[in-house]
Length: 209
Ligand code: NYM
Ligand code: MG
Image (cartoon, rainbow, N blue to C red; front, top):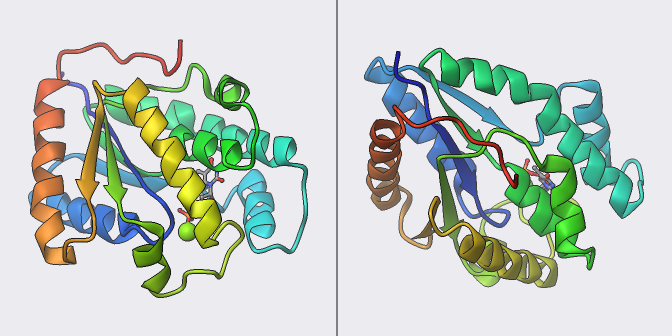
């Protein structure tokens, strides 16, 4: 059986990732395709609830401790992602280890240190980075509600995404997300469809190993 693809949406806060990934997911479900949608942080597990509290500033943790919890939150779902892929279902994920690295390294922590806990996770077949500048993101609804949603911090995150993009040019596509919601969806859907076809007979690799 052809395996499913692992496709990640990344971008600064308010880049439109969640809107677009839901549209793509719904379109695929309506066409009867095998697809699963998830996101990180996945806030319902115990670890996820601690992360949620941190993001809402109701609890405080050291930069290292919260980084490891974000990673642990991915590891607690890694096997289920692999199971979907091996059973022929493609998995669309709203944020992954690239957010983990970009947001912690933006605080000044070492990039390689940041990668370590996520080494060995299922490697994505495609990363779609929705790119908007910080000022555009700021104008969108809800910006500023959670920790990290500050223009200067997001600028730093965007720089780190550029660095990660260079390291992952084989799987990474950057998309200008200042376009309208309706314009963006078909372009993203094309990338998703192409990747699902092209990875069918490729082995699932491990990230950063
Ligand atoms: N975030 C997300 C991290 O700092 N590290 C991670 O590993 C992940 C997955 O959480 N500002 C940050 C990025 C966001 C915040 O994500 C919440 P979202 O997609 O807004 O729920
Ligand atoms: Mg957010």
